[in-house]
Image (cartoon, rainbow, N blue to C red):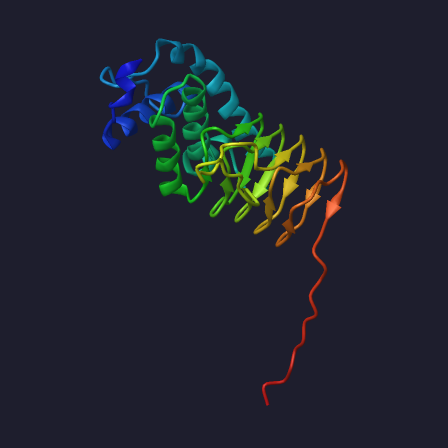
Length: 232
């Protein structure tokens, strides 16, 4: 796989590749296409496609379960940003695990530019993952997310600080949160550092969180004082 060192695919080629993946994941909604022959991917990737399709379809199921505004499955597949970002992410993650450089990050950045959702391809995300609305969501490289997790817009799963080596370069060590199963995080909340959020926990909106939270918890920000005055 030495050719990967200098190989940089075009954006058009990656878009055609993702059109192929859409046909594989949602054959009832998108036409079947051939994988672009000029895209240099490990042969082992083809064996990953059925699992990618299964996982993305669980994400669609999660949106159907969590959003009462959804009218049918086709609406999620064709118009929700969750679908687009998770096809890109789960494809990129499979390639990342196979050791393919550059292409995984290029794929997730394609989805980022289209949806406003930024997920690093190294992140680990379980099945039935739901991002509602989604704009401004950021998920770091070492984040671990369980199954049946729901994130709302503006959520950041980021690093609190970095460790540096002797040459002063930041080290790639675990530094992002762990969210166990059935966690819900509401809008504009930042969870930073290698903290663990226990299963079946709800994190309210506009929370700054840098510590572990036990299972079956509710985390809320104190209600601010609101003053209403007559303009006169």
